[in-house]
Image (cartoon, rainbow over all chains, first blue to last red; front, side):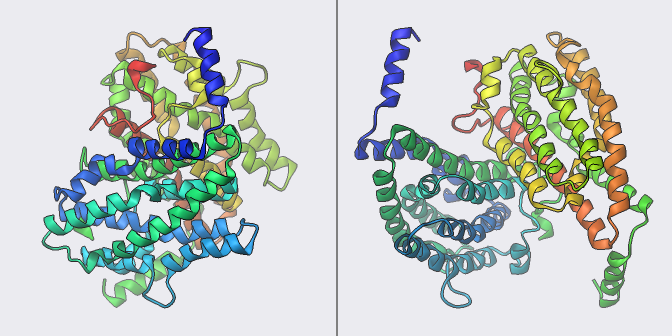
Length: 256
Length: 256
């Protein structure tokens, strides 16, 4: 870069984005980094996965699902007003439900059972890939250690989830005879919950990112979260597809 | 399992191991899970890696090296006596040195430069794989959040490192004409530092793991640490060898 170009670039990166520009920048990150672009997602929804591969996905993804309430409670604990805490509490209700057997985590367990896994084995998380644990734990730690603004921004992968859910459900129902609508019941409420959650979180970051540095932190938080999701599919693909090297101690399908 | 076998197994797993049995159990974990068994390690030391793959390894491994002092300081901050802190402080000195340009982290930067990477790019950690960051951060968090006994036990992968270092150095010198003894200078002091560190840490866990539950925690800590190292090679292998899918934003060799 010439020094003139460098100066222009420095100037550009200091300028505050409008709320619409910030949203557009967030959407560009999704278009480049959301895990619907990952080859494992394509395999899964195109019906190219074996039952064992779908099991590995459901088993590992359970650890992510089971930690979402921990992530949300970690954020609620840091929110300063009852209004904000009530808003975020809806997510806890969505995931943990109002009674035994209700809520997103319980529905994910039914999905895991529906693809042939033992419920107690799934709940033990004994067979998950180490990378799944590291990535998910990094997400909870991010929401604990970064600013509230960044914690809220890291939830914004939900801007892109209705698309992936629609693809996943229709693709899986069409391509796997052994998967039923009931098994995929986890996803149905997400199609309305996610847009509602996004409306709040996106509005919050557009209003509260008041400097370019804060806007950059918001964008970095979304990139981080895309990495968390992407790394999980990398690890699944590596262990169970290509080259298919299962790390010591992780789920071996035939032994399940 | 029959109920008699279950009872026997439960009984066996309650019995305290002798110090020698505990050490043997630790060595078995190394024999099954240490990353010298990983195909990427074998490629690296057999001369099967391209220069780009060696660069990716050096770049990512820098993040691990650079966080070892953070891990050690995190443990020192929790140690209760000057004697223990002095013992562990030697590791800080080994890695951070006594003057600019000395110590393990500085030597790793020279290794990275020696394989053709830009020093500032390496230090920025901008191009590392997300899984590298998640795994290494998990290691620092483990030493912060678990018991001191577990924190010390998690260092015991060094029981197995002289073997891997000897293989790595001789293999890399023999197989890569563009790698010099000077580039690999990082490893020479490790051959004496690691056994000295192990002598203390192994003695500590043998003395302080006084219940079977504590012994199991020690074994689990070593398994965890093996996972931290293994996951890093999984991610390198996936991104830069097979299938060779580099995650969005990570180091692309031709652009380095």
